[in-house]
Image (cartoon, rainbow, N blue to C red; front, side):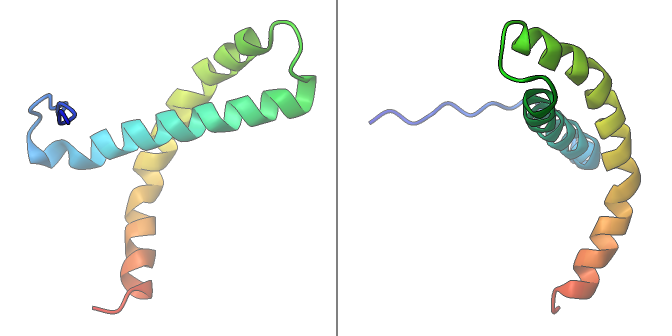
Length: 83
């Protein structure tokens, strides 16, 4: 069996928090847009167009929010997990 090729842009390790925030916010914003648009307006004609328009607003907001709350979440995790 062939191994799956590894995707690596070669970014320096100190960019880890920003890259994490980018992927986390992108995935979560898309999932939330898919669910909220379906709940508010249904799965009918134009569903994916409405999701895309919602995502254009949600992604940058989610990215900034993840960057802002990451230190708080890290502190909460540190207090929750035994050393």
